[in-house]
Amino acid sequence: MTLNAPAGFFVTGTDTEVGKTLISGALILKLREMGASTIGFKPVVAGTYTNSSGQKFNEDLETLRIASGLNSQEQNLCPYILDEAAAPHLVAQKKKVRLDATLILDAFNTLTSAFDSVVVEGAGGFLVPLNNEEDLGDVAQAMDLPVILVVGMRLGCINHALLSCEAIQSRQLTIAGWVANTLSEEMPLLDENIQSLKERIFAPFLGVIPTLPQQLHKSDNAPYSIEALRFAAGHIKLPE
Image 1 (cartoon, rainbow, N blue to C red):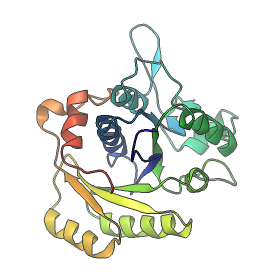
Image 2 (cartoon, rainbow, N blue to C red; image 1 turned 135 degrees about the vertical axis):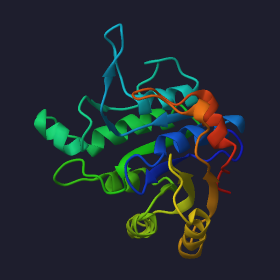
Image 3 (cartoon, helix red, strand yellow; image 1 turned 90 degrees about the vertical axis):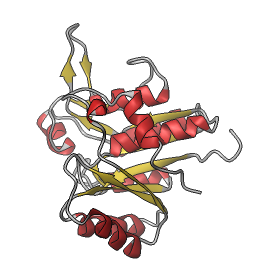
């Protein structure tokens, strides 16, 4: 284990499409800069695309591979890859597949035994269901990693952030910090909203990521570039 390297983080968000993948990739880069062997992991993804060679990919997983310094499909980063972009438990039910927390934890533990740090990116928000009995909050609780909350800065984010914090703390998990991610259209009173969150979230503020410059925007179905991940990494800090 690299000196002072954390075992990893569980990255969750106030909603879907709030920047969990961008922040997860940035955290992986920062941990690797410390000298820690670090890899990304995702319990489940829903939504794939097919390239010109007929291979199926998921943009979130490919971003985690880029950040982790892996070639495409070099390492299994996700035990459940579902084709349809919808709520994972509903897609799984449709395909008659059971999303099993035990299998997810087995895959996670395989990585923890091989790497200093594992950055786990959740799917959607903290309480996304896996099946009729389990949700991602259960998985996070079993992993027992400190949680980083990504707040997508848009109307309604204060309520979503505070509810997420309550849900995380109800599982006796530590909120290691939170990140404000400025989305494609900057919200009115952005600074004031961030200040309101600082006053109400009793966890370290790790930084605000500005809207990505136009040249770093990603196209549909494409992963984030290493340049976009470096841009994000330059605007956040690791929890102490």
